[in-house]
Length: 82
Image (spheres, rainbow, N blue to C red):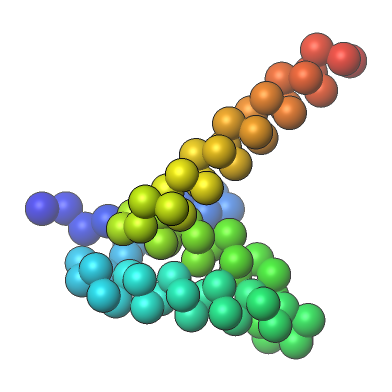
């Protein structure tokens, strides 16, 4: 079995094979993103946490897919309006 990898911001990062570690890591990223106004933490952590959770949780997977469909429609509409 290959190790799961996540692509974010043009970079590919390997994820732990353990489901518990992936879920814990995703939740920690989301919680860190909630306090994104602090200097080290940032709001960028929320989408990354959802992306990691989408490997294991159906709700996060659905949210990720809806966001991708929304983003692609938005890009197409903007391209057609130019």
